Image (cartoon, rainbow, N blue to C red; front, side, top):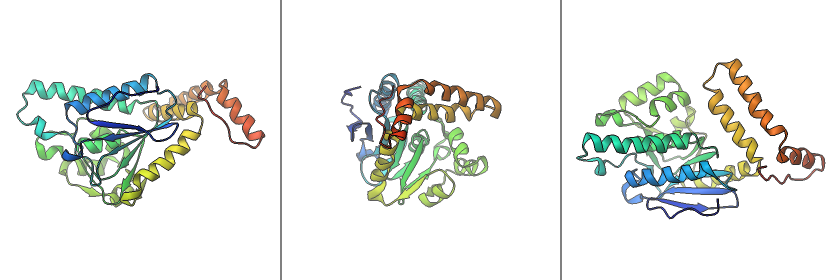
Length: 266
C-alpha cells in the first residue's frame, strides 16, 4: 500500500521503510474516541488487513505528552438515544475487533494515561511499551456501563482473572509499575523515550521475515484459544506454510553466506 487517506482524527506517518506510526490526534480532548475516530480507525485497520504493502510493523500512540487515550468521547455521548449509542458502539466493536485480528504486528506506545476504551485499545495491540508516568484504568462501572471493547476478556488474559475482576469492578486506576509487574506492559520507559523504544523494537520486527512474523502472530492468537494438542497441530500448519517461501530459502542461504538476509515477504 503506497498511500493512505488523510484522516480527521488520526495522523499517519511512515517512519521508516517498513514501519507505520499511527497517532490518535485529538489531544485537546485526551485523544478520546468519537464517532469519526471510530470510522477513521476502522478504515485504516481494514486497509492494512486487505493490503499492508511493505508495512511490516505498526506503532500506535497518542498525541501530546499526558494522555494516550481517555476512552470514548463522553461529551459526544451526552444525551445520545439508545439507538444512537448502540449504533456508535457497533462501529467501535468492528474497529476494535479488526484491530485485534490485524495480520501486521502492532505495538502500543502508551505515552500517557490509558483509561476505559483507551486501555482496551492498548490491550488490542500485540504488546505495550509505556511511559512511567502513565496510569491505567477500566472506569466503565463508575459510569453505569461496563467494558465493551474487549476489556473483560483481554485484561484477564493478560494479568489473571482475580486481579482483572478487582480492577474492572472497582474502576480504580493503577500505575505503570504495577502494570509492568502484573504483565500488562512489556517495558516502562521515560516519557520522552517511549516512542523511540517502540520504534527500535518495530525495526527489529520489520527486519525479520514478514511472512514468519505474521504466522507467529496468527499461531499465538488462535492457538491460545484451543486445547494444547489442537494448538500444536495448528502451529505446525502455520509453520508448513513457510517451508516453500522465497524468504525461507533466502534466510538459510544468508545464514550460510554469513550475511544479513534480504526478506521480501514472498
